[in-house]
Length: 446
Ligand code: SUG
Image 1: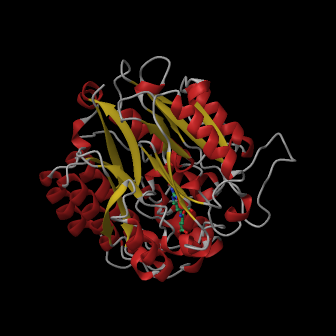
Image 2: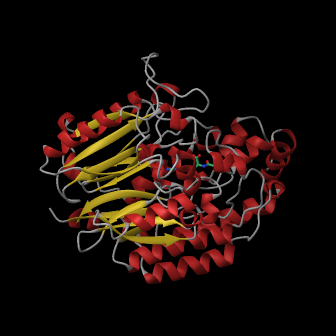
Image 3: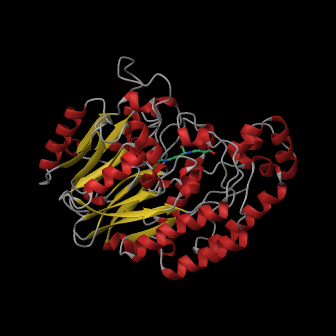
């Protein structure tokens, strides 16, 4: 079947900031309380979307979430007018205020897990919004993510958007950051690959010691059930707990897959040989040959992979069937990674081309090219059935750039989160955005 992979990139919101909220995410911790530039962050993200759309890839935009999250603040006992709530939260619990202002919904790889119709029992595209319950600042994203996905994929004949899994540690779910799909082509029946960091009901299973494992096996299995996946075409694998302890908080920081290619670090999985073998066997069942592109620790140490986000790249199939790797500039600034990439391109392997972007504003919070996008494979009929107002075009790009330039600040420091004017500016920006994207009623900010 004719199908394309749409990349839904998160549009960075007007209060983009660095709050050091993600224990286990090295960049988030290192940049705590430094000043951010929301305008530049949004423009960097839009430039990536525009360039990839211009190169012929199917590209769409995922709107930002409402900030601050007044519902969270009021639930935690901050009351009065909006300005009172902000002032008291800043005085008594600045970390909670930062959580309510978190920039994190921009990383839409964590918004949901998506199974294309070629993989599901009922032939519809299935989405499950991720509960992200490992971190307070991400634990309510699923409310708006579900609402946004239902607004875009509202056609029940073609799509189903499931409620998030129960928001408890046993079902910790981080969405597509721990999920990859392999297939001979986007429209062909595929193999869905789930990577988890710990097993709730088996205390003897491998688990990290220093940093939290955010995804559980139980969550991955529940999603596979909800989506009606064929067990013969579903593979579950344990992440290597040692690399979680080195800052690999999601599997997409150490591996990425596309088509029949798995680009990964030798230390990514608890059982490398068993994992690659399970994938190879499952792919054989859909008439595809797995092509592993393995990076050894002697070529790129884990610390360099984490610092450069080499594996948080987008692996895209070009119109000629060859593949391009979309990497952040940081990959060029790291000697080991840059030399690896020079050797890889043109070596006869499946990855033919490198595309580089400046995504520094996102990278400083631990989000690379792959974090910024949610992959949704759609047939032509499904693409026609989704809301078209979010598809990236030159016209939409120009309108969004003008909108960013009108509404966004170029500097936010921690103390600015207490400024009631910032909340007013954010609300005005989103109100106008619903008109640009033709999504009235997208937000319930009451
Ligand atoms: O969950 N950072 C995000 C980064 C998410 C990256 N996504 C993928 N790997 N797919 C996180 O750790 C930092 C926010 C702050 O510190 O202000 C943050 O949430």
